[in-house]
Image (cartoon, rainbow, N blue to C red; front, top):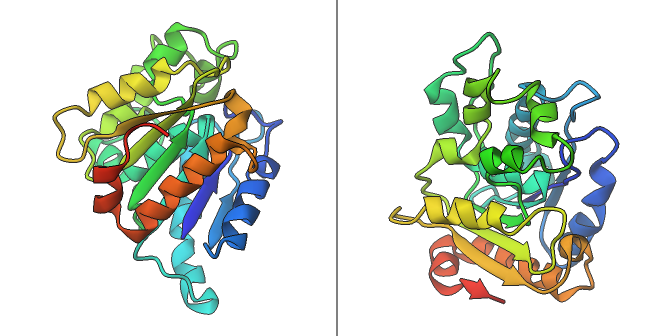
Length: 245
């Protein structure tokens, strides 16, 4: 089972149509795919709505498992750009929820479906760094309702860093020529996992930001390969694949 989470810097004008080609490709290769939509900043999302939708969408797989004969023993998330951030965040959402929201907003905790692996495609995995670089004209503050100076707790809880260390294998795949999300966003996350029992792996692939969601490109094919390995055996996948594909 693969949960596909689209990108678009969490903005309302980008929707699940970005993930549809990936979900179709996975299905054509015999993998059940759930192209997950969520509210974005500008259409009811932001904090905490976007995060609640990701949690609810993943947990809803439990209701679909029996009628659609889904095997939920292995559930991998494949997320692009902002979707990469949400995919890695979702892998640690139970730990984030335990930390407590810490402000006036509620945050949905983990439910009955747990991710067993993540392939992040040029994910915005370092929210603090993304805010500092003002990526996409303040996309992080737009998602979270304001800057970290005003809402430090929600910025911390929205970051995948808050859930470290994870016991879930994560591949931070990044396009070499990415000019939309700098590779440092993935590198910072991977560096933060060093010394963990299950450290994340940085994987460099050719192409630009959108090559990762072009199902004919080597960059996407590398991601699909990693997804398949995680579905077969997460420990084997984490041990075998790292570096450049």
